[in-house]
Length: 258
Length: 325
Image 1 (cartoon, each protein chain N blue to C red):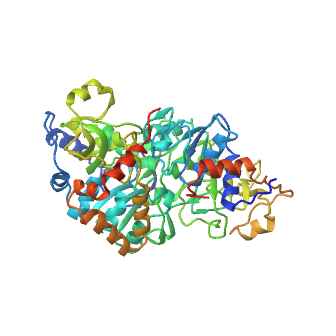
Image 2: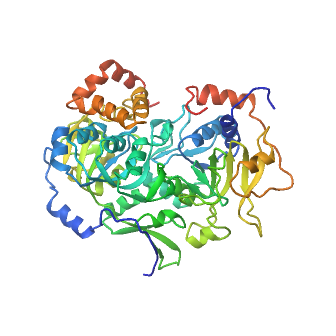
Image 3: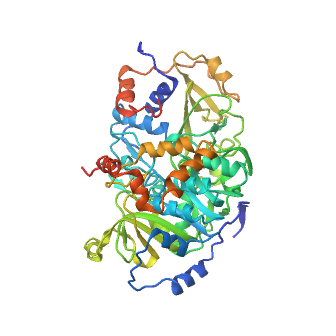
């Protein structure tokens, strides 16, 4: 624990960063996933190979990319190719992880980034799938990073943009999605979630650990559907002084996000 | 082949691959012809009301911003657009020029959603949004680039993306897997910004190539804007770097700082204050109009635009460029 104060966003980024696995390939979506990836490379995963959809692979993340195509996504990189090459690399099974954001998520980890309300007459038109659908379809394991509230954690997404478990066990394979690909975690401003996807499981989202200072009840109250709650819910470590220093001084000194 | 699922999204541009071959046979010269022209001439000659058009890469990165601004000045309207856009399509939408979208992502990245998109779609000004993922739209262009009518892919399956696109799901006749069939996308016009081109259109790009190779090969007319126009001998020195060969190209526009306020890898960085000015201005329709008045309608051409930005500022962006280390 640390006696430093930190924001919910900083905490979410730190918990997400700890999910990166050293020596793996990971598709990084725009925004918060970039900060988490950068923090990971500066802490637990120095040999992470970040992949950015418009062509950058294996960049040294010295400065925060503000766009998935900017030069920082291939700064001292191993590859500067194009979108087809990297998306096809994912389709061939070479990309281990995908880290994504979204506007809504449902109990099966399906994400929405297209419209709030009905598609043809939306209440709000969101940016669109971008590479989100591809990442959620093609990467072996997908992690969603989201603000946690009832408007975002909904029983049914308004537009199923990026596949999680779709409707449950076996649904991805039945739909034709690559066998063995799956959502594994959701990191929110309140907690870390995984899925009840063991033998006989419901394949619904499950509370894995709360953030420090957050009660299980608070997580339940801020989720618009029934979460699977295990008997024992551990608490995530608070951001360390070093994680916060790196995040504030090296990653986002201009405070785009934190 | 049995069709298992069919998108209800409009086929905004029907993929006539035989027609495209015929076009390439009869309308595209194989001769080395000087294609240099002004941005005004490129837009007035090749872009027309109602055409199906796309740009590459996108707003803040190696984007044909100078040519995009000229399109707004000439008010080419009822555009059918594939995007993939950050600032460039925002300008078109704010000017009321876009009617239909094969949309993948239109937003402001680090700065969030696009208010220009929201206003245009939520008001009904844009009548049609057909949904695609980034890979899907690129593979649609790749199909055209390959000269085939569609490509199978393993994206979009199991989601609402299929329903609101014009893709189809079939069973792979060889292995029985369900696959998504993406129709070839043939653009009437494409605009691509590159690092260097010769007068004939042979083009080279530094850094990531986005979907330039695919889009260039999927368009009936191709406008290239280039930071530098180089002698053909320079192209011949590094022919391995030619990503877009001359015979695909119809117009070559010399556009130094053509991607401003976006960046150009190894040449100049992005102009954050001007990008932020759009982010702030575009929050309201009036603000967006004021921005267009200042940066688009208020200047006659790209030379005047660069004067408005000023040498001092442009030099600073050069200083802030990504450097080869």
